[in-house]
Image (cartoon, helix red, strand yellow):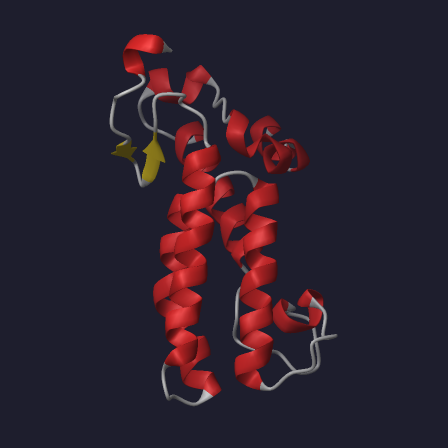
Length: 159
C-alpha cells in the first residue's frame, strides 16, 4: 500500500473510503456520528417524546443510507434503543421487540434501524430485479456487504 499511504479518504454514496478500501473506517465514523447526534439531542431541554421524534425523522433516515453490515446495524440499534428508553421513561429491561413491535397491545410509532435497513435492502434488490433495463435486471444483484440479510430473504430473487 506504499504509494497510496498519503491519499485522503474519499466519500462516495454516503460512505467514507480510505486507501485500504475497507469498511472499518466508515463503520467507526458512523458509530461516532450516531453517538454524537444522540448525545446532542439528549442535551436539549425537550420532553422525551420530542427527542424520540427528532430521532425518528432526522437521524434514522441518514443512518439507513450510511449503514453497512447487518451486524453493525444491530449494534447501532442497541445504542439507539438505550437512548429511546431513557427519553421515554421506559425500563431498561424492555426488549427491542416491545419497543419496535407492530403486533403489541401498546404500539409505539417507532421503526427500528434494523427493520428500516432490511426494507432498504429489499427495495434495492427489487429495484435491480424489476428494472426496465434488461442488462440490469438480468445481471443478478450481487450485494455481498448485506449478504447476511439477503441470504435470509433469498426467496425474493427466486420470485
